[in-house]
Length: 310
Length: 103
Image 1: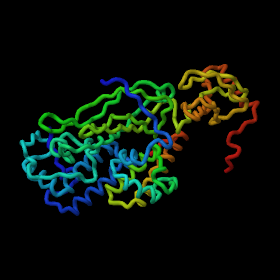
Image 2: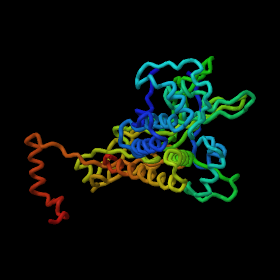
Image 3: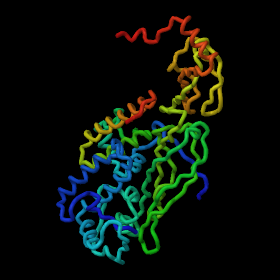
Image 4: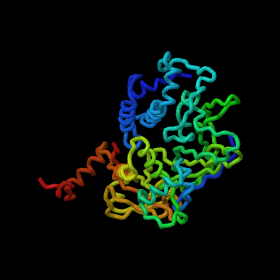
């Protein structure tokens, strides 16, 4: 296990005051806040920063960490000596045990017993949270997806380490981005025979090369020829749940939308599917094609820039 | 791997007050104070026993809790930040719908 230098993570010296540690944390919390940060690894960095601050903002934890880690530097192989934490009483900094489970193995090894309860206590297990990335097809059809989460596990010696836990989940059709799904009893185990917590999964969609999703409505571009747009036509279009024949009205323009009612993501009510027309022009790469373009140029009084002025 | 688990979609009115508190890893009193301060969008009925919440409420309240914790923000300020973040999300969706990059 690698030693984590929490002072380095927050960019403060080892003798930094509590006020300096707090200021450094807030600055980084703003920089890496997952909702607004443009940093590519913002979420991972925010976890690291939260973990470092959880230790350094707590007098007891910081003292224990300092005592243990004064000869170590970041990345060095580290094994805590047995009973290293005797005499310390750890509490959380506003993080529940379930949330601090997302911290590193290093943290779990050192402070894993944080919030542990004595015998005779009975409490429902904590709820766990995670984000999942789904493909659009599962929203239309529902289906099975394997989801792997990192969860804390306690060994016979009472030490806590993170382990991968894979769940085989039946995703109901109609799921859409921003929605939450609940898996009953898949959170942390209860204490003293009380029920386990639940697992909440926040749904996000994998980016799709053809479809964009907004709530339950789905958008796709439909390439058409200039004569299909001008004269009208019935064309075949592939959609997430198969293929449909759609009628393009005569006089359609590029960017015009065809609405296919109730062909978006299923639900009550189902969403709509919008096909956005995109007019593609054929290349003038043969004498005949050039001749046709020249005929149009000479015979059609068409100026797409006439309303631009200037 | 375990057997297949059944997932429940959380739509409107899917969570009780106690479930919402457990889902945010906070005490019920913390949620009651935030709801009464109207940090969620809808004005609640006076009796907390009649309250129910959606999956979106859960995500919003967890965001507010993280903001309060990380920046020692008061609930109203955290709610204002949550409003701005949600507005940003909506605008990003509109940008993406218009075929424009969201950054």
